[in-house]
Length: 314
Image 1 (cartoon, helix red, strand yellow):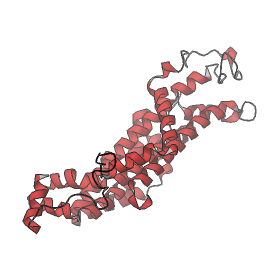
Image 2 (image 1 turned 60 degrees about the vertical axis):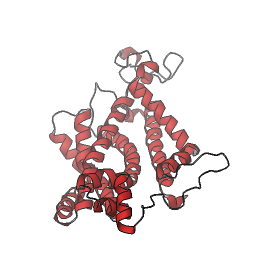
Image 3 (image 1 turned 60 degrees about the horizontal axis):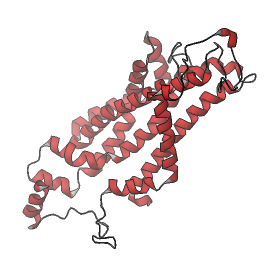
């Protein structure tokens, strides 16, 4: 803050006014000052948005299934007996049993962890890799931007699903880590391009020029002044991408190049029981319901976050 104040005094003869335009007046009827920051306004809007609240609660429930499955079931999903194969839902087996005679409710509860773990790891990876690439390209421009942009174009030319299948077939083991790695390799350019555009529009703002005028280093300008103001579009996209990666794991597993038994995941449940849909539709309805609910919740959260962070949409 001292850097910006000094820069304002050096350029205009008086301290720069850092209060955003349209800030609510201080000393309102309650006697409390309301925060004028974009994030504070967004937080207030999100907690009042019923769609965001319901979607968040659903994600918290699914997250608790992934992290603490023993809170939801005391049965072992690997304790199977083929004598009890494909039993319909009843009082003892509320989701019935699968083709191996395993408790299907426990299988779906424990199946939440691989699906969410891959989505979180892959999203974190594209945020770090793509965010850093976009930040460097947008800030430095010139030959740095040209090289990074051409690399992005190469990866954009790879069809996502076909590229994922090829990479996973080449790899010997399909695990949470290998699937996450492949998703990061194929998906980081989109978030890099979003970050690049945000940085280009943010680096020419007055407060950045003020910080540069007082001698702030490139690292300080990028990570202290530009990144906090350019990160909002990336966070919105990352929230939506979480749902996309959950469905991507299920798709790749359904095609036979993703996770393999004895792992438990919603994709495996769908892949194993697709042929029984007409006879025992509940074998597909339960994992598909959890999968669709999770993907839809992430998308709704991303849409609400986008609306909250864009003042033009208020």
